[in-house]
Length: 164
Image 1: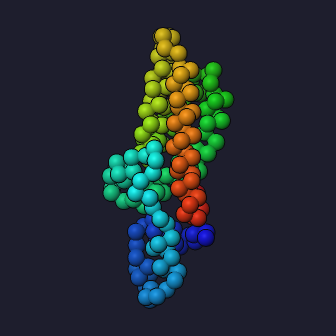
Image 2: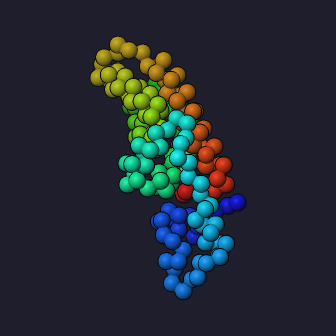
Image 3: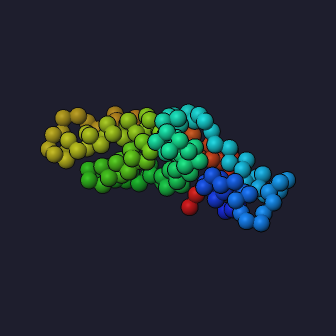
């Protein structure tokens, strides 16, 4: 079932449907659906949901919305990142973006692997080519697939559209 904009807005702003003047929400299936349509998971494999929710004012719906943005905006990230390999500036920018987003939504391992690769890339950019980034790239790709795949699956299970 596709969630309407009204249902999403009610859930996102944490307002009760009775907030709308002149609307009697008692027994209104639209209002009941709006409150229960989004099943926000308390746990998600690969994510520190509790920590992320705590950073978002203890509002799970804010985390859920951020996770939806993560799914939407990073769906093609891996391909773009892999195309940037060989250009340390572009690759670092791409890795930094996913690291920041992952940390925001609580994708701990993804953020950790992205941070490790970003440090290596910064060292290479400074002329210190000691550690090869290849093993970390493999670990980052695996962490991305795991985190993004689980987030995408969680959103698909709700039947709700992703935030724009």
